[in-house]
View 1 (tube, rainbow, N blue to C red):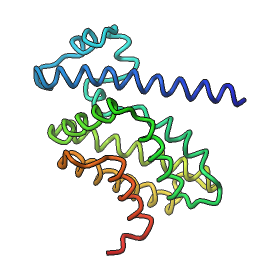
View 2 (cartoon, helix red, strand yellow):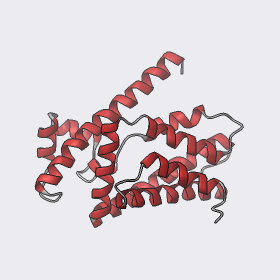
View 3 (cartoon, helix red, strand yellow):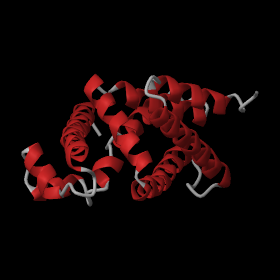
View 4 (cartoon, helix red, strand yellow):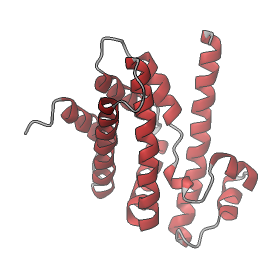
Length: 199
């Protein structure tokens, strides 16, 4: 893809991510005011000033308003930029941190609220776990392509699973500790993983 088309694609992904974040902000406000169960997709769409069909273009279900963040394409883009001499784990770490760096202060605040709600409602926690499996497969595919192997390679799957496990620990800790900084937790968790979790 020519550089100008790559730039345009990247801008589209960032714009989409910002639109999703805006809808999530309205949804979270409604969840706080009315409760998660009582809030409808129609109410969220109306608050965000979009049609329900536009809502369903971004989210398949109401659960997805909290589960989906659309930063995966940004992470993939950043992963491909990583120098070839980096280890696969270091490349994943850098890509994840770069994705977080794109988030504005408002998007970071929204992400914290989403995580807190997800961790407090059983069905959302289960949906989040399912999303983690999708993320694990995505990471496995990225790493496999970089290494020239298939995504079902055992070592690649272990690496992807370890990264997702570390990210899950970050999400849980972040939800329980309001004073924590997400980017710092993520970097520390992935650094620990890369160092072999020496105690």
